[in-house]
Length: 405
Ligand code: PMP
Image (tube, rainbow, N blue to C red; front, side, top):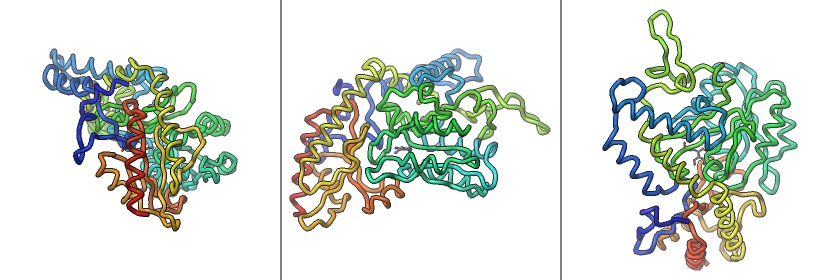
């Protein structure tokens, strides 16, 4: 799938052709995205929203066009529901501050799950400390899927918010978000979906999911770093207070009283990353040209092939097999005597053969503790990966394991 659009994929690493399978951490960028950044700084760089001059108007228009593209991508009702942030982490921190200030009081409960990324744990923990609220955790079943029966049991009238990953960044499992939202809404509870690993791989429709909030990062979907999105239903964003103060987010400021700007600017304090948003718009165009459904089905085939190939190897344990998955596969390798080969060692030996994977806790320590291992090796695919990449990876992995047997 248009591999030639990604110049970095022609690189050699340690004298070998690069096989990049660390896409869940960040994706590579197509030339159009890189060109957009050069174009912005070369032709129309100026601060947005405040200027009457030509460049500022072009910059503003480009930034706002990008917002419309994001709204369309996730099927938001309007671009007012799209807040640009620095990334998923920033989006969740903003929400925890804003929602937390307005909605959470002592004794209230926030629900997350056992498989969350630290970004979807720590901001809520900090909120719970600030407000003397309580964090509840959806446990996992033996097959590592979310225990929905247990979830029903912990939802109660003290629950203020449920915040869950759509797709696990470690296991690649697609969680039953629609069902989670339905169960929470039956009790009048809001749901935030961490879409960092789903928006890049699935056609996500916030109206179909009916989630109250969705957060994701541009850099994991062929866009630039330093940019992310906090989507919120208008009814929530209207009612919630801003998380940060400064320029852009105000209507009038005086020492007596400050009034806030309209949506979405109320939540965007300071100069926004308008070059990033423009480049992200180009990444979205690029994905849509290929087709979100086409990307999803291509990657799904690839991830299945990856899981199958891994499962045929002796001494490899693949986590959460035969589950709905998107993008990532985690595994561990063992010696003949059953002792674990440290994932870090596997990663280093793969790197020596030009294969980039991620090893460790993947910023999900509670999940790794649950698996009772020091970490996993994670291979994750993007639209530019091929079956040949997977074959090269498997050959390299066999060689790496041989060194430990
Ligand atoms: N949530 C999930 C599920 C993730 O995979 C990641 C990135 N690994 C994050 C949150 C944090 O994203 P970012 O570092 O772009 O803020």
